[in-house]
Image (cartoon, rainbow, N blue to C red; front, top):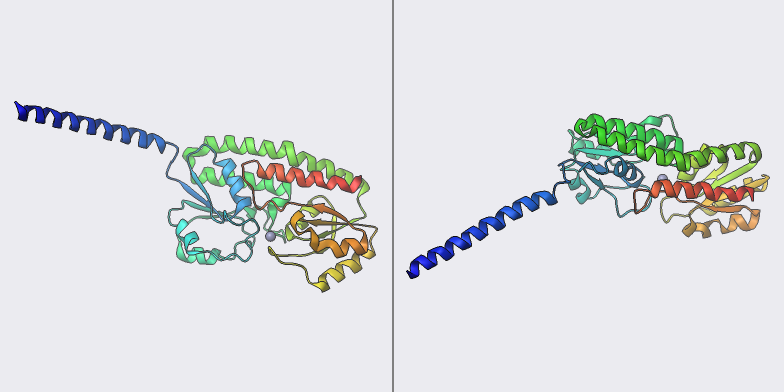
Length: 296
Ligand SMILES: [Zn+2]
């Protein structure tokens, strides 16, 4: 009698265990429903924010390899952790045009890994910061979406829809603003000369039809030399109207130029960091709005 009770209890416990196991399996799988097994690694933020928009809701794992960096990656050296993150990558998206000096290293270690360069749409451009020209950004969106569709054909419908939605956001926001501003500059801003405290801003001003008299290609925490500043001041003194484009937290670097030439200062965001999918659209819109100071 007693042993029958023990047997029953054992059966009950076993049954409960099977039920729990089934629940774990079902819900465990459900928790991973969004994971389609594809991992797309991006070299840094400007590439990541496009990939994030294009692959939204596809179940792909989109990774920003240098998520802790806020600037460009001109001289970036890959860490062991970065290298490891490529082990499971289905695709590596990079800026290209010389931005990632570590690519040879990647090719050597992962010869089978497909690498897509978004700037290859503007290979003729002398400046690798392609996202700072809204027209180029639109081309990058088209190129990356076509490439991703080719790589992952079963996600084609979703990627195309995402590309259309993201393209529309850029078109309705910064793209239209850029054209209005370019027209005003063409009419009233021919004599404006710019001094850019970041190579990224050079492509932005050029895209608006503005001219640069000095461009400092600085890495983060670097300052232009006294000589470079003196040269810029000499040039600025010969100009009708001069404007300095600089990141707000580095503005002190422009103090001497401003004091000696009366140049206007415009705060710019190089758009190399952000915390949400609309960071590019909003950041670029803010950059364009900031230029309105020129005509006030
Ligand atoms: Zn840069």
